[in-house]
Every structure is written in structure tokens, then in C-alpha cells.
Amino acid sequence: MIRELIDPLFVKARVGDVASYLNKRKRLLDSPPASLVKSAAEAGISIEDLANARHRLEKLVVDGDFSRQDGQAAWMPRDADLGVVQSALEEFYRDQDAEHKTVAKGFAEQPDPVSDESLADAWRPTAARSFMRSMEESDWLGWGLSFVIAKAIEGVNHKADFKEQDVPVQIESNARLVLMGDWGSAVRRAKAVGKQIEEQLKPANAGNRERHLIHLGDVYYAGREFEYQRVLECWPVNESDAEKIGSWCLNGNHDMFSGGKPLYKFLGDPRFKKQNGCTYFALENKDWLVFGLDSAFESEGGKGDAGGLAGGQAEWIMKQIRRAPHKKVMLLSHHQPFSAWENESPLLVEKLQPILQRDTPVAAWFWGHEHRWAVYEPAHNINYPALIGHGGVPVYASSEQPNPEREKVRAWDRRSFRHLLESYSYLGFAVLDLDGAEGTVHYIDENGKPTKPDPDRVA
Image 1 (cartoon, rainbow, N blue to C red):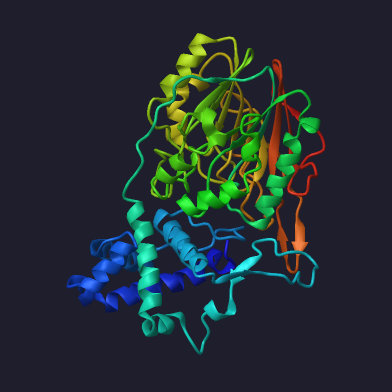
Image 2 (cartoon, rainbow, N blue to C red):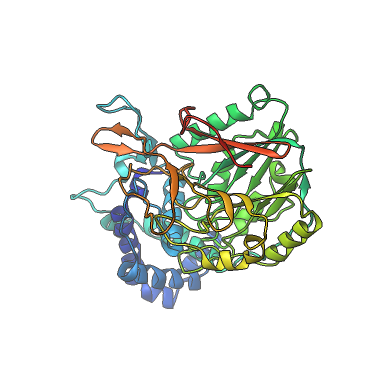
């Protein structure tokens, strides 16, 4: 990720620049010359798309939430329009080779903990030469950036069709499931997490267990095709190992910012063959039913902060449970059923009431969305609830305590490291081992160190 584009003030300024550029060319949009129509068509858009982009950008200038949430070292807006524009800006800059990697390691002799990529000097606006002035003097720059943003916005209007799953995938009684949440940023530290995951998936470390890697959703900024491509380039399972190691990916709110079609295309990669092109799945063996849910396709609210449950997922899950009522049930999702820090997901929980109200508790539920790590005390008929949304988005170390009046937290990562004047939380992932009817989980950070000293037993 380009450092300037995870700064809300920089993005707000560029949104204003492009909105102003298009507004000043409103007459051209109302009566476009043939050359403009041709150029737009070559970029894959229409004049109507440009006009729509102008209206959306002008609205963002007035109503867009460019505030940085507490703890955000990398600004990831939970707003589809802002995320899509942020993504389009990065796509444009990368197409122009406008970024460069930072070589210097700074006073602390450490790489930048947020992003080691930034705009080249020639592309940074200055007091002497604003970006808006550059656009006004160069229709190549102005129209080019407008085309990219308009195409990205237009793509949001075509939501994918929800695909229903068929049958659970059978796995061995001894299996290692590596779980990572909110990993799809492709920043240097997320790649470091990926390298540590590769180590945990090696036969020497996994023992005789069958191996699977599961992403709990969110490819940034907006689940667009070029973003999935860069995630594939650093995916911890190589194409040559596709038959040996299962790859799975759930749907997150950022994945839906672009309507979900790029996610479905991503799932067409041979590594995800067993997922059957769907955004939810189930893994089954003699003792376990592990359900990966799509909580984002029909999430609640304009920002998708609260999860839902699209299609016939709830009925499909209950069908599998009724078929094998003796098996332990585990749930995986992007969204949280509850939180001691943020909002809950009432629609998601309501849809899952038949599962959550059974006499037999849910053995474990792992989720992401919040960019932190925490293990809760048993709650809501879930024996082992855990948040693992710390896979790929850099955040500042937070002193915010969990709210005990909402939910009781057993453990959360209080560790941090310093870089210059700031303290940062560690990124990491979970390694879940199923050995017959028993399940244990241990947590590992980006440096290969344990997040907590001892593994937890989940069943």
C-alpha cells in the first residue's frame, strides 16, 4: 500500500481535486466530443459513468467520513465509496509507476511498520505545485485519473450473484487449520505473517496432520481485481502445493465494497478448488463440523460493520448438524457475533439462533473484522470465542480496555513494539490443530513468536 493513500487527509484532498476537475468540465460531459467518448470507451467506461463519478465525488467531499479511528496506523475507511476511490487512486499511481520503496530504515534502524512504499517525489503535491494545478495543466493526468475512478465506482453497481454451497468437504481426523483474519493488505508485515504461516504449514511442523489455510476475509482496500492479484502473489500456499494444502477464503465487508465479483473470480484460482466457487463452506471429519460463514454478502449498515447471513446458509448448516448431531461444531466468520470494543452483529446472531440455542454448545467460533487479537470467556453458548483480526493491517498499540459490562475477555495482546515515537501492536495468526475429538490452538505473531505462552484447548 502506498503510504500517502492510507492517510485520510491526502485522500480527501485528491477526492476534492478530481471532483473539481470534473465539475469544471461539466459542459464537456453534457455535450462530449467524439474524442472524449472514444477515450472513455477505451478506458472501459461511458460518459454517464464519468458524470456519476462526479456526483459521487462531490458528495464525498461534503459527507465523506475522512476521520481516522483510534488506533488506525493505516487508514482503512469502512465506507464503500471511500474504499473504492482509495483503491482507484492506488491503481492509477501504480499504473504510472509513481511509487517507490523506502530504503532507509530511520533512526530506530527498523523498516517502516506501516508501509515501505510511498509516492515518488515527482508525484507528491507541494505548496509550489499543487496536484490540482498539475491536473489543470495536463488533461492526460486529469482525464486519466478520472477514468480510473469512474471505472472503479461503476464496478460497484454490479453485485455478484450469491452462490449456494453443495456438500461439506471431508478432511482427515488429524488436521491443521491455519487461520488468518484481515490479512489481505499485502504490506510488508502482512507478508511477514505469510512467511510464518508457510513455516507452520511445512510437514516437519504440522506432523502427520492434513493441512489447510483459511482467510477470514477482507482484501484491501475494496476487494478489487488488482488487489486480489497482489494477494495471490504472496499467498502462503504455492500453486505447486495446491493438491497438498487446502486454501479457503471467506467474504469480508471490504471484499463487498466492489460488489463481490472479483472475490468470486479470485476463488477460481486452482488453490481454492475445494471451495467450489462459493464464499462459504464446511469441513467435516469423524468428530468435527467446521463451518466457514459468509457474513458479509448481506451485512448490516452502509459500512458493513455488522454481519448477516446471506442465502440458505443457516438452513444448510442445520441440515449438516441434524445429519451428524454427535459432531462438535466450530464456526468461522469475518464478522463478530459480539465484541467488548465495537458493535455486535444482531442479524448474524439471529440467523444462527437454531445453532446457538442447541443443548450442545458451539465448541469454538473464530472471527476477524476488528484489527486486534482477543480470546473471550465462554459466552452465548460458545465455549471458545476468539477474535483474530490482526493478520495484516498495522495498528497503533491501544490502551483501550475491553468493556467488562459487554463481554468478558480472558486474554488480549498487551504486547507492543516501538518505532520512533509510536508504539504498534503485533500482527499474527492462529494455528488450530484437530487431533481426533480434541482441538488445540496456539497463536503466533509476525516474528514467529508466541502471542501467549501456552496453547489453548478448544475442545
